[in-house]
Amino acid sequence: MLTSSLLVTAIGRNDLKPHFATRQLDPAGLTARLLDWFAGNARDLPWRRTTSPYAIWVSEIMLQQTQVKTVIPYFERWMKALPGVRALAEADLDLVLKLWEGLGYYTRARNLQKAAQIIMRDHGGRFPENFEAVLALPGIGRYTAGAVCSIAFGQPTPILDGNVVRVLSRLFGVVTPAKEKRTVETLWGLAEALVRSVPESSSEFNQSLMELGATVCLPRQPLCGQCPVRELCFALREGKVESLPNVAAGPAATLRRVHAFVLETGGKFLLVRRPEGTVNGGLWEFPNIEVAPGSDPKASARGLFGVEPLSIELAHQVRHTITRYRITVDVFHVRTARRPKPAKPDAFQWTGRDGLESLAFPSAHRQIANRLLAGDSAKPRRRSQSA
Ligand code: SF4
Image 1 (tube, rainbow, N blue to C red):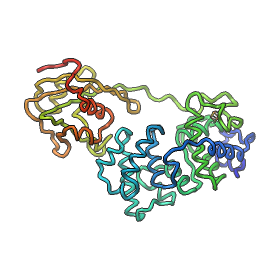
Image 2: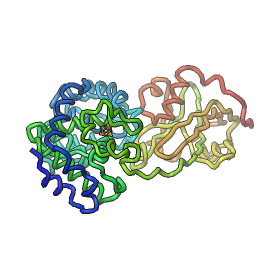
Image 3: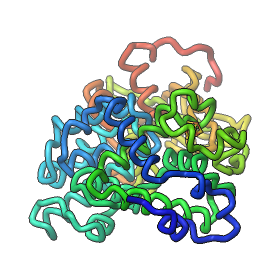
């Protein structure tokens, strides 16, 4: 049972204390309400039908930066192809990346495999139960370790992701900037005090916070009328729902331009592999280069291929967003007098339709490949340059 003194310990800062409604709150009522609500309202999700730490870990990594409805088919494909730690540890990296294709942030997939290999080597293939051992695995931070240990093993380990930050900030009136260290520490303290107050229900309680943030306490226009803890909520009472958590506006969007080239000879397309250690490392792309607005695609092609292009035709454009970047990819069909030889022999390949289907591409290049597979390649929209 959570006491006020525990909460004050968790809060720990005089300038924050007035904003917490602990004196009016019945903390036990808060956790009980959330647990009751979760019991009746939890969505039926594939990773909630298991206590397998492997499955829960995979789902938590997939859910970072990605919505539940997007993750479900990825999770199901992944579990079918790689049903356990050993299968993941021993899988070909191309398969791992293919299963992840479209989820973005591919370091997550690579780290999953690295962690699986460490579990095989250091833990006999058994997912570790010790919080520190889980935290030591690649790609696992305090949130994911807390989620796996509480959901899979029933340990009272706290969680704090964007959803939980929003719920706790509104509920308890955490008004200091959400990114500041003192605020983060305060929120972790709150999450810990709460989950420790219901040690026998750690899994359900942590999931209730996640679920409330995902389905009711939404970033904009939260459904306060349906909220099981609305009578206890600082933000609702004080008219601060829209202003909490205290998050500064992000940096303005940056526009970027890329020239990408489809070079086909004898039914084969030239693809290049992104170097290890870079964003999307290990994935395949059509040869491309970032350019300044208005750049000459012929110069781009000459620089990429080292040979004079015979013709260049604009086929289509792909627009996509990565974090704050708004990227426009101009996709050209290019012909050259002879096959160019990229500098690193192991970093390119000529592939047919089978490769376009089976290899893993970043999302913009997957769109280019799909248009080629659909037969759009023969219909460039307009002629841009001709040699
Ligand atoms: Fe969020 Fe509204 Fe519930 Fe407060 S009452 S926790 S703002 S949904």
